[in-house]
Length: 95
Ligand SMILES: NC(=O)c1ccc[n+]([C@@H]2O[C@H](COP(=O)([O-])OP(=O)(O)OC[C@H]3O[C@@H](n4cnc5c(N)ncnc54)[C@H](OP(=O)(O)O)[C@@H]3O)[C@@H](O)[C@H]2O)c1
Image 1 (tube, protein in one colour):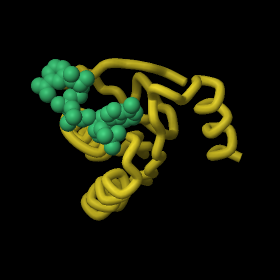
Image 2 (spheres, protein in one colour):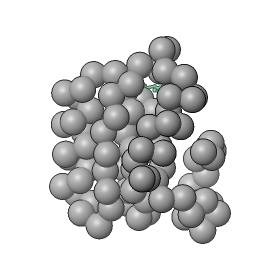
Image 3 (cartoon, protein in one colour):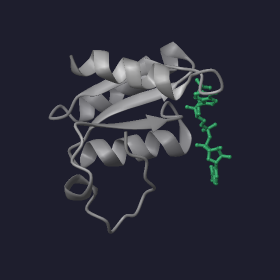
Image 4 (cartoon, helix red, strand yellow):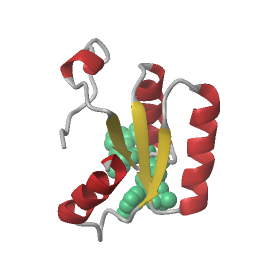
């Protein structure tokens, strides 16, 4: 799992050619904007936040706009989740 910050002039897709980008706090605000910029650049994106219905709405909106990428919604409370459980979910996603 790679973690990185946003640089508008950086070609993230060639620097980090992972299959998915995971964006936390992605149902609104900065996270949602971040997720949209990644989808626009051709990334498959996993949106994470706590509230399932807000998350589903955000995922449907982005998927409607960017049909060439996969947008997944994963409801998680980041105050409770562990890196191990997240990595386990990634393994299941890729199997
Ligand atoms: N807005 C700015 O100008 C600005 C500037 C500098 C720094 N920041 C910081 O950047 C962060 C985001 O700011 P924002 O304005 O985009 O905030 P926001 O609009 O309130 O977005 C918060 C997002 O995080 C999710 N979230 C909150 N608690 C969570 C948790 N425990 N687990 C998973 N998801 C959680 C929310 O969805 P749910 O409630 O459904 O979980 C929502 O999607 C904040 O920490 C803020 O202090 C913001």
